[in-house]
Amino acid sequence: MTTPLLEMHGVSKSFGASRALDNVSLALRGGEVHALIGENGAGKSTLMKILSGAYRPDQGRMEIGGVAYAPRGPRGARNLGVAMIYQELTLAPHLSVEANVMLGQERVVAGFIRRKEHRRLVAQALELLDHPDIRPETVAGNLSVGAQQLVEVARALVADARLIVFDEPTSSLTERDAERLFEIIERLRAKGLAIVYISHFLEEVRRVAQHYTVLRDGRSVATGPVAGTELATMIGQMVGRDLTELFPRVPHEPGEPILELTELSRRPIPKKADLVLRRGEILGIAGLVGAGRTELLRAIFSLDSVRSGSVCVRGISSRNATPRLRIRQGLGYLSEDRKGEGLALGRSIEDNMTYSALDQYSRWGWLDLGRRKSDAAGWMTKLRIKAISPSQVIGDLSGGNQQKVAIARLLHQDAEVLLLDEPTRGIDLGSKAEIYRLIGELAAQGKAIIMVSSYLPELFGICDRIAVMTRGVLSKARPVSDWTEHSVMEVATGG
Ligand code: ADP
Ligand code: MG
Image (cartoon, rainbow, N blue to C red):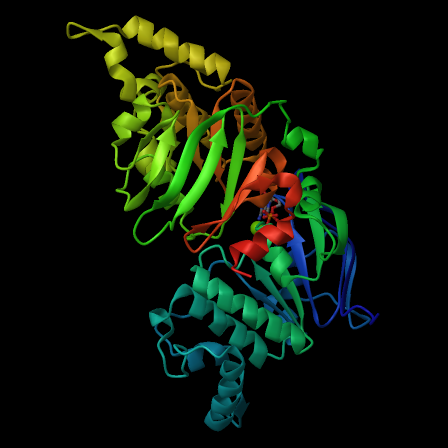
């Protein structure tokens, strides 16, 4: 084992009365990508701002290559080989790539800028990045966010960085740019640089990093090699609670088949999907974004027209129906786009819960508002929705409570088969745990659930069986115990 390139010892930092970092230590080696993970507010950015000279620590010390390191400001850190790529980009949009890369690190002799050397340095850095759109003369503002980020990396390379920190670099990148960034990080690593990679996307972390450290509430709570550490373990370390708490198991028993898909196809995807779903069963569908999982749910619910094959609900088979018929057959669909097509955020809880079943309350043109309110209040209690009253506007609720309202609507429609697309996306962990419990309770009542999710730990945490969608093709659904996170990813990526 080589000696660390960087060591941070006992670093603490407070902002007023709040302690952002408490006695944190970290060691990094050259040729290693070290992931720094943790929930929002855990202290990741603060620790890296100390490393890159933007903040001074209250306590603690740092060493680089065995020599005491106490940068005075970001420029001082850069001169000592530490570069930080921020989330928000810092390029001058009207200047060329070359000017941006050299900004503040111009090579000057006797007052003259050494153009040739600039060109050589920039060309060298860009060669490593190997991006078709980035040429020295390109105006930076015309580049995509991903390309601009790479220009920042070029800056770091020209500054002879030994250590580059990426703070949530993929949060505003397209999938393609993210993919390219991963390749470049690997190249930097192979050149012997040390990389700190901050992210809360654990799948990414597993892809790019060899080591990881978890921060929680300003403390370092775990560190170790990525290989051989399950995602679930990392999550447990991030959230600081037992996974049985995060994924409450509600006992349920799969019964008779309720939904059967036979070679269901829509153009261009999905392709010939076969599936049998039982009452009292939670079936997870994993896959990469764009694999066709949402399209499958939409085809089942007849939101899009189906090309061939059939959907059989309780023994009654049909191909192209309407969502209205599907609802009458007992299907319920929860869109992944909660705000766009799921909920009316400006309307009340009761409106949102009941608007697709309004005829229940109307008689001779008269709407029974009192009964509607008490029904809505009933669902609020059953689903433990935190709100003042059924007439509260749902835009004011937390994401988790909004999602419960959306699920309550399906239940209010008497759905027996729930098609849930990314039901926990964008909500905090506490609310996730409540949604998991709710899904478990619904299965225990004999409902059948299909859950599409990109978050593998939850599929493993709550599902009975998992199927994987790859470029429109749905794998056979197998019991969770037959899969590992690795084998799911292998199938998902077409391996
Ligand atoms: P992370 O990057 O892990 O999301 P941060 O390092 O940004 O976490 O924040 C850690 C804690 O420090 C949070 O409670 C945050 O509110 C606080 N904090 C960070 N920067 C400042 C600041 N400049 N002033 C006051 N509080 C801050
Ligand atoms: Mg941060």
